[in-house]
Length: 224
Image (cartoon, rainbow, N blue to C red):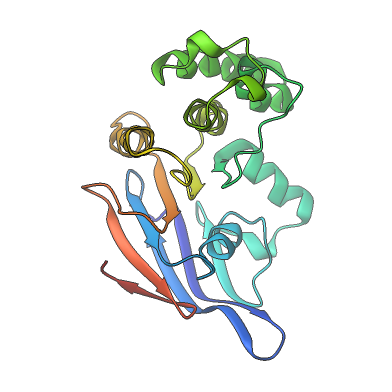
């Protein structure tokens, strides 16, 4: 089975002397949860941004579903993200004037048509599955951070992406809420029907069953 995500020689430089990423190579298979661990400022967000096609690497290649992301036009890259990629941002980024339900349904609104209706229905299912259906009519200001993170995860999954990138998904959460978010990500990766690839960046401990890699000084290595 071909990797969902494949990076080779990925480099991201800021000026001549600052290398957020330095010849990083990584492959992620369907149904695999890979946790990139590193200190704050280690380049984890930059790595996820490059892998998801949100940020241009200085050098190297990123392939999503076998497609060279760098060879795509910006329009084609956006279409690929919209249809097949989910992203959970570190700062959550829920739309302040929308309810939790409408935030979770955003992918459906963007897709439109039958795919959009299916995504909207799945968003409602995910809110219930993640234990936040009771808060569906609240705006983000009325949600706890743990609830907001679950809504963001529902939004990222509503359109059934093949890969989900989660940037510091447990940051600023209490221990119980953090464990719950990790459990959801583990469950997602292990779902035999979907076989979603999950790449998460964190400075916290990784959940059991994840493949742990470490990012330090711009380089990736196996282990804690």
